[in-house]
Image (tube, rainbow, N blue to C red):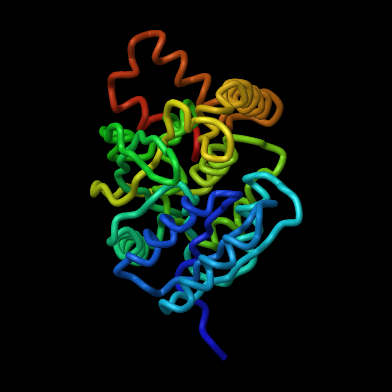
Length: 288
């Protein structure tokens, strides 16, 4: 009986073969090869996905492909990929993002050495690019969150601190906190991250090992677009929805994400947010 791979790398895609091929090369470049690449085609054309999957199989990669007959959304696509393969760890590598070769090795080494951590994130390059006539053109590059050295739950509830491409997490943590919320058309990763942080700690690797790509200009819409650009209104709407959800949870059941958010806002209003001790205090007292 073949043993499960240590990592399931889940790639969500839809009608973007050039993006998927770039993602495939990113996954294949990993110094750690103990993974299965699970491609979830969320209601898009099948031929291009199958062709790229076959190419990667010929190069020696373990590849699974899941085709949804219709678009089920980002959360459902992530859940489909995660449940399709057995593994100790899980990573979401969307078709438009990338890893540098040492991402998996560094993430696995961290989680192997720190069994009390649920997940780990790394430094991320935010790359702004254009996609014209099948070619990617880099416009600019900067650090996504250059000051991230610790993941404090109080900060994560206020804003999402890292994109999916930056995180490696335990399957046991996914089983404990539950799947991605399929009712959220956007920000499903943020909502999942908050639940993950409520269940345990998320570590940080200071090295920049991932790249988060944002299309600009004429390639910002349609199949080539990013939701943060082409669906900005949804991000704004669902940020409010999630904040209200967490505050209602606080009001109905006691301190939870909404309580953290409320305390965070109060402290910042009174100019106490600059001091690290209040973050430590909230994490230790509110989450005990």
